[in-house]
Length: 230
Image (cartoon, rainbow, N blue to C red; front, side):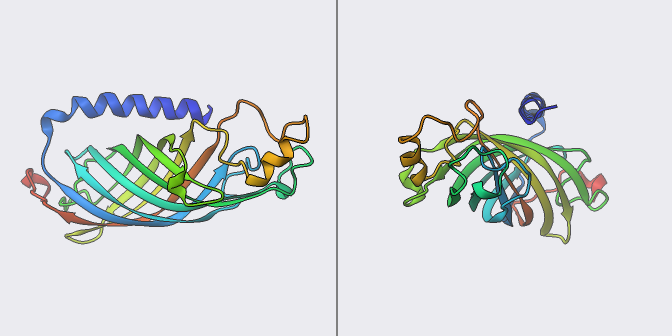
């Protein structure tokens, strides 16, 4: 099954189940920091984890009940691709190297497979899936916020574990579907294209990128409503 089909299934499932759970809403919040890596999947790189570069960020998670949460995040990272190491690129574009920062603002819905709250003592961990929507800002030649934002659809899987009373440790791996085929463009590439009739990639293929890593959260405004789990 293609990544695009998987993203649609996860997004539809989370949207329907999230709105069906609104009657169980409670006030619970977490603030967290994220450290990990990221890589680009485009015309110059079609192999996962190749060219991985660092990424880090911060987020806020609002937990509605033991199954559903909503989070907003800011992530900074770098995307890298070396056309010289790819077998999918047409000459004469083998010398193009992509290496630039990106900034991502996104919101996502999370679904826990196990009944999990950061205040629970019986269920201290849970795998989960997530899907959402956001915008990515990037630039090859200047500050990232000079560029027009690109719409992205993040989705993926994660695992969260309640370490202490106020601390949660987690791991998350996600893909980002973009609606652009320019993320692996380069300022030198434009001059190449103007002097040749050949293509450097696969027309119509949109770029993807991945962000993954570990995070720590601190719980705020927590009120345990269900004493059976305490």
